[in-house]
Image (cartoon, rainbow, N blue to C red; front, side, top):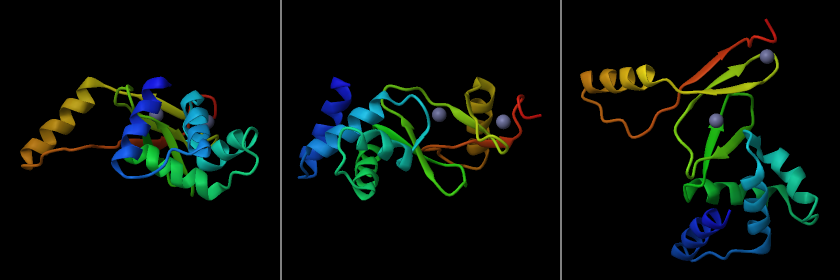
Length: 141
Ligand SMILES: [Zn+2]
Ligand SMILES: [Zn+2]
């Protein structure tokens, strides 16, 4: 959390913004979430200690966290954006159950390697990638 706070403070200083108590509270709550949390879920958590915070502040702070490299923004097409930790976390892809909404993280070296090969064959330099697999999980089948 201290390192995360440092990253956010550096980003905020570089961009002439202010680290407010509410922004700190959002970072604090986000740092404790090991899930793929939506802005509204985070809002409910933060509102317990910051009852005057608005959803707009949550969205703006999540954008800051994403821009500073602390968070990744995820969109699984269900109408709400989700966020997960990026800082000091390794790359992974997602499987999403369309029945219960469960999100499974995975990574496979062969998939990663194949993507590199396909890109190379197309003269393409990958800067990032997302692989979302949709289907029905073992519990729902
Ligand atoms: Zn399921
Ligand atoms: Zn994830």
